[in-house]
Image 1: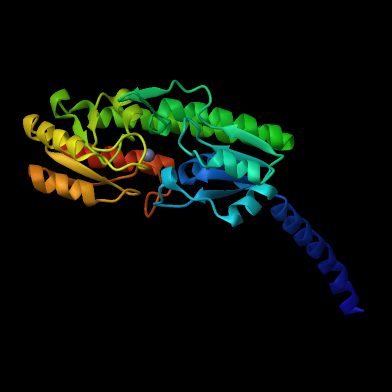
Image 2: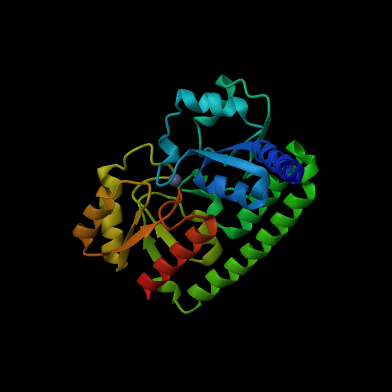
Length: 289
Ligand code: ZN
């Protein structure tokens, strides 16, 4: 008799556990083109979404070669989120070959694109004001594919937008005591036009807005002359680019290597977009003082 009573008590617990398992399986499957977009989707989607980044940590999305497994992953997704502005030129073909029938989002939609050396800079996520637009776009797309989560997505987005405003104030405060003429930075490629515009910093690089092509010897020589003439003190490596070029520029000019900036991918201790913005700001302002 005692056994039967025990069974009666245990049975509802098993049923509840079964239901919790079913919910975790039913998460909204989202594919993000690269790690920074994946983080923004996680911030807004929270526990309701399962996000996969096609281009992983410390990897270069400009030159990514999609794999057959990516086609299969996209085929199962409810939502695919890319940056746009010409950042992932491989994404269109990939989505087409997956015969993707779900919702697609260009997260940068509505952002004012900036140009550098006559090319559109796709790295719009380097300005917090733009990321607020990304977050609103992601929130609306998640509501479209999962209407029953609307209140969760709205609450998560509102809390995250407040965090972004806080970050923006922090970055402005960090730059406040650095004189304008010292705000000059060398990086591998033109990935910081939006950060430069938002916080009044000048960035120079030997490579253009993409890492697809090697800079010419003439461009590198011009940059070396500029560093010497303007007495620029620090050059920076990027976490997803080769450091070879920056090493040679440092040795030719005597500028010191200021450290590693995160431009196009998260990685290591830099686990989120907020981490990335804080890391870059701390590194830049401490090196330029
Ligand atoms: Zn880039």
